[in-house]
Structure formats: structure tokens, C-alpha cells
Length: 169
Image (cartoon, rainbow, N blue to C red; front, side):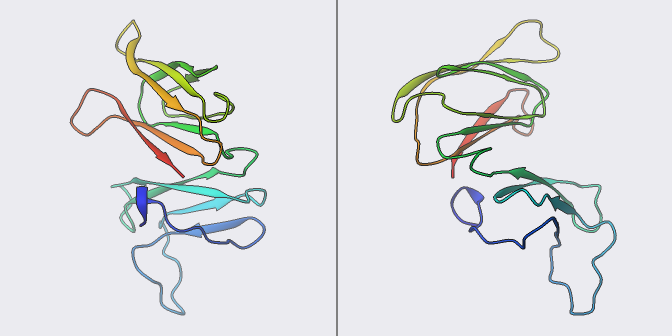
């Protein structure tokens, strides 16, 4: 995969489709294995992102996939998509916008700032076992109206903490 582990962009067939995933190419007359991962892509999704997650319970191909609507009116240039993979709730301000991101959820923020404006990001996390907010991010970010940004919030393996990874696309 290219930079940030994103593949090249390619055109999908029109209408609702189902995408299947395997670790090998199927033979010409070979049926798609029962239990192999697949995702449905609704007909009204012109652009999609597909996220891959480990799925050790799947014996055919140990990966699970999730389709995200990346249409320009849903997740367009200048937008930030927060994807929370933790059991912590993330709350606070991103520029002039409020973020209240539940555990294991996705939210898109639009118009957090004016084009090329530098703005404060003040986010806290609320863990299920702690009664008070814990500082998560205190930074200044710059608004870019030419690209979209994914922000993955996750707990590193073997850690009790939570961190994030930001990927412009």
C-alpha cells in the first residue's frame, strides 16, 4: 500500500455491490468461501473508505472490514473524520466546533476553522472506569480545504493509554 496504508483510488461498479476479501486469488470456477469476510456498499456511496481490522475468529481470512461513506457531501475536502476504536468517550473543542465522540464510534467535523487558519484543539477523554475527564489533545492544528483528514483514536497494544494517528487523504 502507498503512504499511510491507503490504496490507490479505483472505480467500482454502479449500484449496490458486495465486496469480498481473501488472502489469495480465486480460481475461475471456484466459489467464494462461506464465512469469508465481505461488505455491502450501498448504491448511493460514490466514494468509500474500507477499514480493515484483525478478526482472529474468522478461520477463512482473519480480517473484518467496515465501509465508510466518503462522498464529498459526507466527508469532503477540509473535513476531519474521527474514528474512535476505544471504550473512552472523547469530548472537547476542535476549532469552533464541539466534538462529543462516543466509544467505538465515528464523527465528521465540518468547518472547524476558516481556510488556512490555525486553531486550538482541546480534547479530553472520559474512560469508563474514571469519574473525571483526562487531558487527551492540547494542540494547534491548521485548516486545509484541499484535503480530508482521518483521525484514528486507539489504545496501543499493551497500554492503558489512548493515542491518535492523523492521516491526510
